[in-house]
Image 1 (tube, rainbow, N blue to C red):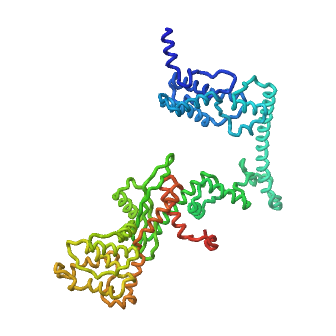
Image 2: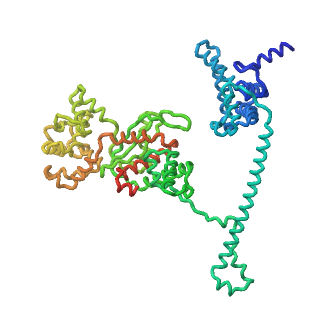
Length: 561
């Protein structure tokens, strides 16, 4: 039996803690070691969970603090402190076989912490404690655990008992006065209603007086004032645009109301209310933006970016894709969304673009797509190309995206079915046809080359019928431009309506990806403003609309904002 007892006692020993104990003994406030011994008794010996063991340990520790008449923290905070000690011990147990100096230092520091007071006192205990003796006792306990809890102070206990009785009598008196006041208010209101017209009352019989008495409820004497909501659609949009958090918005609005002389009791103003109303305003505003948006012939732009994604508990990196439309009619840019991609593949990006176009019902208005190409063209323009047609294609593309190119545009060359490069060069020249940088002579040469059945520059491999050359006019078909002005001399083009419409569309054609980059900058700035993905998309729509409506902060805008 002795051997079994020694083995059992040895197995119950907890490294760095000691032997578990069911109860905390002594007359001093418990230390960390006292609490952990009780914790391991419930956790190891009684096979309880960590949470239940921490709760029972807190109850054992709390009894000592209540005897000492010292204010303590809330229960959940004290339980978390006990759990932290347990988690720190678990980490040390995992590394107990290491012999490094740092691990040895951590073990010593943990042992020292266990021998110190398990301080669960309130953060404002020094201000809450009125007795100077109690204040000094807590200070000594925190420093060296000197002193102990004595017997009950009979004088102080009697004083507190009298104070409690006085408080109880006062509460009973206040309740009786409130009931009496309510009855008197109801009686006065009934009397005043009967005395509104003395002459009429005198003509009535005494038996009919009762029908003029108004029955009042217990709250009849109080005038109910309807509190108004302050988070309107305009206020919500301003808070979203300025990236103001809910807590900051609540404090700003409360301070503004108090400074203006209005009490915050007259408005619905709290952190949770402001948060809910802002979410509702965003959703309504986004639905209104989608409903009123009229799609036109546009170019779709997109650009991806790795952005920190703020989740409920962690922060991760997500792949975001900013998708925008640039209208060819007025040049305005519209943000469709900045969805999160499941992967960074091209297929995922293409699916996201198509889904956003369908959600905005504008997939039939898209004629051109634009990705990040300007940087690539600028780089290739200064590289030595292996073939002359490669160099010509890069030069035309550079001119299309607005880069400076010194060499002029060559006349259209031969188109061969086996040479896709020649077709690409020809298409770029058609796109640049309406560019003012091209001289009238070059434009005339381009038109002549495009509408001629035969020419010295065409190879015999071309079809005989002009109907087979419709691919040459694919640019005009794609952009829905009426190309009837090609049949008149070039010098008359500026006076032709079809040419002016084509010129307007071409000028509004954004070949660079600056719009998508601005969309990326928008999500970078407001990524942490909302955790919910749907609310984040609503927020971006509201901010973009507010920026378009109020671009500046002048007096006229402030009157409408």
